[in-house]
Amino acid sequence: MRIALSQITTGPDPERNLDVVRDEAHRAAEAGARLIAFPEATMACFGTRLAPLAQPLDGPWADRVRQIAQDAGLVVVAGMFTPAPDGKVTNTLLATGPGVEAAYDKIHLYDAFGFLESATVAAGSDVVTIDVEDVRVGLATCYDVRFPELFRAHADAGAVLTVLPASWGAGPGKREQWELLVRARALDATVWLAAVDQADPGASGLAVAPKTPAGIGYSTVVGPDGTVRERLEAAPGLLVADLDLSEVETVRKAVPVLANRRLG
Image (cartoon, rainbow, N blue to C red):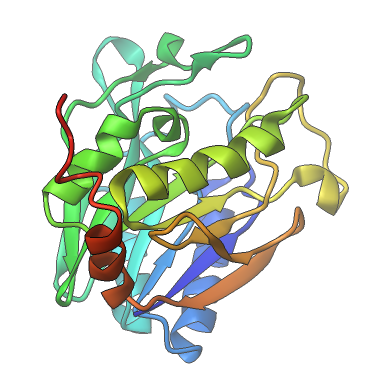
């Protein structure tokens, strides 16, 4: 299976961000990808007032993404914000394209390192997988990567790949944690893991308010054995990777951590 990860830096204008989504989706389609994943907060970057920008899943922003996916002929996964009660929003992944229409609401909110996502964002509760042709794919978002039970739930649902859009917060040790966690979650569930982060704004000369999780780059594809197969650096870029999905069965036979579980 060929996939693409689009490491971009989004701004506060949802319409301008859609132009980037369109261009990147067509680049991925020309490269033969069946799925392209964009970062968390593709609709609008963190540090923006999200409630006035949030739209329902049947609103114009999501419809434009659907049209982009249809025109490009591949599945698009992109982070957006949908309205929630009490003036909050939901941090949502829209997955849409040939044979696919689903949404995942981020379960684990980023109340860490001095940031309080739960002040403005409502948490989701449902584990979501999609089928891209005959391949089952789990969906997770950013801070979810610190909770291995979600990735094991994907595997239990039949997933052989998890897609993890993020807008990772910078800071001391944060790149090392990102790299460790994405590898660990692939090993925990013996799945391919495709983690796509926002590019580091500093790589494009953009300033970011302190403590705002704006991305560090280093989007990564990890095999089910925990080895890094492909990786970008800090700057924007498009990563196209071929996944040998038969490796999942091979690794699960060699290291049957799912079958050997005694708890959970």
